Amino acid sequence: MTEVEVEVASPYRVLVGSGLLERVAAMVAEPAVAVVSDTNVAPHYGTAAHRLLSEAGKRVKLVEVPAGEESKSLQMLGDVLRRLAQAGFGRDCAVLAIGGGVVSDLAGFAAASYLRGVAYYACPTSLLAMVDASVGGKTGVNLPEGKNLVGAFWQPRLVMADVATLATLPERQFREGAVELYKHGLLGEAKLLTALDDREFRRDGDAAILEEYVARSVAVKARVVADDEREQGGRAFLNLGHSLAHALEAVTGHRLSHGEAVAYGLLFSALLGKERGWHDFVGQARRLLTWLEPTPLPSLAFDDLMPYLLRDKKNSAAGQRFVLLEQEATPVLVDDVGEFEQRRAWERLLEVEA
Figure (cartoon, helix red, strand yellow):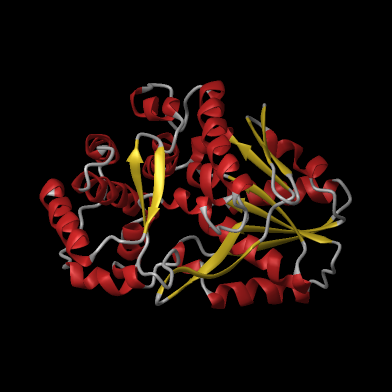
């Protein structure tokens, strides 16, 4: 097992290893626990966690939500909160997320909101949630106007990333999660860039090798979060590729998954930076897309994307902001990327994708 410390105001550990879910009852201190999971994951792990926690003498409520991005909504948040209230949970309860990124974001926001904040634990079961959604305390839901526009910073007490759960993931979801891991490689952990060529980097690969990749990726995010817990500056670097990604997700009604959209977004960022003579990682972004084999882009004009790009949460009074790589592993936050540059990069992306 590998431990990664997240040195924020209320520090916590991310445990990465195999078989961690079997120890969940010993990891959660509170006497009452709401286990939030989705309809895909609950039969595998949610019910098992419910049993283990109950056998340890805790009062447990399994809160199951529909699988899919549609559950990241204000309506579903309200449903989860009402179920906690109906169960009579008090401030000494904990919310335990068992699932992927949607469950992590929704359950974390519920924990931040219920009774103005209760303990939150995360057991991510997808690669995306292990290396991204469960670490750093960003929780939230979507609006029709855009992704993650409502939420709160609410750090977990503990994250348990059990790599054994990856074996039950569909291959497509594993590869989509690898996009965020690869992004962390571009931000400064070169070992992660070798994952695509490693035969053991697969959902049922060697547990020790998966543990190393996941722990290295988590460590990248932990370092950035420790320096900027509430995204006032450098934490925005983790959004490399995400400006276009969030726009693509919104305009397609999430027909493009998050991982697919980020892969296209990384190529977009690479093309923007190359035009400025900055670090050229176009080849690496194309290599990722080839490996991922994403859903082809629908017929979209840049004007379809612009309303969502203008509402991106990184934007400031100075204008639109993009994360680019000025040099290798040297991200910068840029607010002078004009519409002409963006249109040109989009046109080139369509040429590459074709």
